Length: 479
Image (cartoon, rainbow, N blue to C red; front, side, top):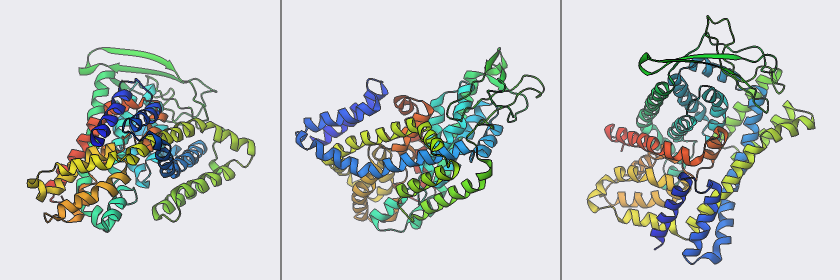
């Protein structure tokens, strides 16, 4: 009964948010509360919720201070060179924009933190997607899938969990998986190219003049943009003029070009004259960020503590006046509240799912349903199961609750635990869009995309990417 109710609860949650019948926050709270009562454990709801909140509180704290830290770094101009470089590459070609999204997300993912990746990627490219009227779910889908593949880095989380659960060396798990993961990353770029072609066909081929960063602020001079688009197949043309408006919080972005010989206004990235810029502190901020990420990778201190200290130091040095510090915190307060609220709402869902025993029953039902004939192929079985299970479960639940069971079943048929561990990484491309991953709410929140829309669009592509990784692992004899 718990197995059936567990699947029904997850299904009800996904259907309601994708049909936009409930907001994700309300669904994460009310649906598990209802099912907790249905299984006859309503009296323990408070205990389950508090346990879930306790488990996710460090994550919520990390996200809160990470948003403030990287928000400040964006405000002071640390990422302006990256933004300008990506914008110059992208120009006004939808194909380049989407491929640039995958490239930027993959590069920033090297720090091992999904929230950081999404904050930087969205901050850089959101204005460009808006101005070109490109689909924002394409941006969120590509960014999440690229980050999911890169999330398998040893310091990203899943590999370390698999190593800990099975008492293996993380290097023994990750290094042989590199070729398969590389193929997965190539698949992400191929996906970005295909989606970019689709956007180009929908919007027409947009032609910009010479691309450069403008030197005037939006307040000093409104930027005129003339986009001349040729429809699909080179037929049909459209022309339009739009006037840029500045953003808020010192991060207004405008993109545009003249239709002439490049003598007009070019492509504008982050406002180069915003009041929050601190060019004299650029190298301090760069060194602070490198030091923070290095300590994060080395796990010198807990990640929430590192971001708490980093945010406090960044605010104090860049904005020594109390009034300015309050203004910066206020500028990012909406993102902080939205994300932390979603994390604590997700704590209700995970708390009930785990506390009532639904997760355990679902996992054992799935494992018991594996035919004996598949025993020698437990690597393949684990890879296939990792795709849905890491979507419906937290990484902790999967790697510490399910993977050991799969490893035991594999050992009985002569399959090495390290093979099971490698196969367990396959589903990470899809995992990063799971409603139980706090970072995904940073992504959809900053991109102003409904979570249900993101889910409908991304799941199929992310699952396909995971299957590509699995196929490459089998082809290379890794699994």
